[in-house]
Image 1 (cartoon, rainbow, N blue to C red):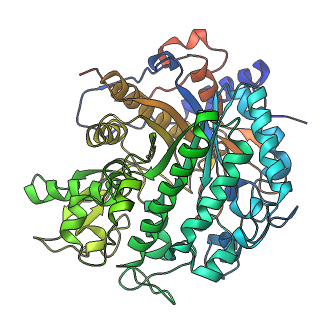
Image 2: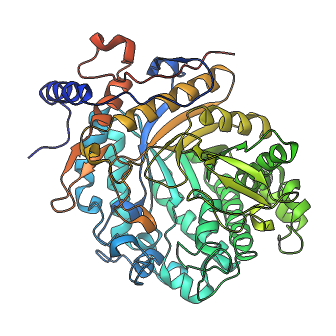
Image 3: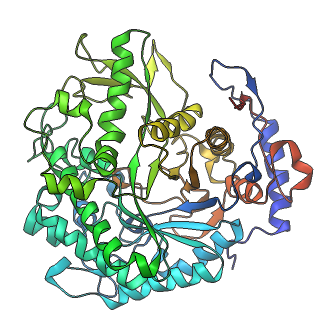
Length: 543
């Protein structure tokens, strides 16, 4: 049985397969304004000690949804509501990582990564939250993952909460709309610190509180599916207010967990704790000064919404200016608790959008890449789109609002560097979703390689220009359950057969392995397999 290792025999086959298919494929030209050149990015372009890894999350890959004492999660419940998930999919089995974790760890080891970002299932460790006991089978499962990673020289990079939590907390409290969820989260975090902190040095408290608040409480596409017009037609919710309340509770939960860690665990465990934000880059739709302000405002209402309180102790002034009483206020002691409560920033970056002002001009959503409600305070009175005069901002992907704009990686990192006073950063997710009509994705995923290579090149330039970025994680190791999209969207560098669940490396897995071996496009002869691409792409130069 194949175990996922990329041997020379496999590599030779992949080279031949790649060259044959490449001859039948036209070169896709990058749509950028600057001078084009070939990307040549190597691992050695990054600092010593830089972490390179892959990222996953518990519900998206584990399966075993009710095995060994695991409780029902909010996603287990949501997936059973007809029409919630594409094709009626669920994470009941997912990639069966719960039973195949050793195979997946061997895959990671064969790639040559030195870090692995994964999350801990809240409902597997605490099936009923504080209303029940600790599930020792759940504790053991993650102990085995952590120990087997460390034996192979792979650093565990652990996310405590990645969208999934016990359904009982939703039933009792209303989930993140209740302040009581803060103490539930701190209890969960404490169990994680106690159980794994002697071996885990990197902790992410919460994954993308900005995105989860939007999708769960504004657009209604994540559980508990709350929304109101014009954002959607849900059975409950207030899209103008609830996202702000949910994010407020997550921010305070984070700060309380960090205080606990620093007071009780840091002196012995010497770890660092950060948070992860979803971060589009935004560019003005026109040269109009209002659109330029709109782009700045979009960044504030997206990234700074979460990070400003955790660095400076309060919401961004841009949000205070346009929100009224619906934006919660922090008490003085809460501001002290929040201020400087992150050791690092985790950035999940996939693409760049245009931003148009909706204060001094009308905004009508008339293309597939825009969202409704742009003329409301919850969206900062900003219309965001991937099209200008019918022309996309970059090559499309499988996600409607994720377009390939490599320079955006450098720009979002530079924004965070300047706004947050050189706070250390990790790119905790960056990856490519194949268009659903791209039938060769299972093996010949050259578009994904182009994406990863070019985004890494701009990340390397940001670092050369002074950004304190300390790691990069591909999203994702293998095709997985992509939330409301089910299995219809594919981000993985490994294909997972939907029937057998066998893992098969795509061409991008060979590319990543060679990259980690310090191969580059212009030095193919030094690689065991391929290095890659013949695409024209703007070559970042040091500034």
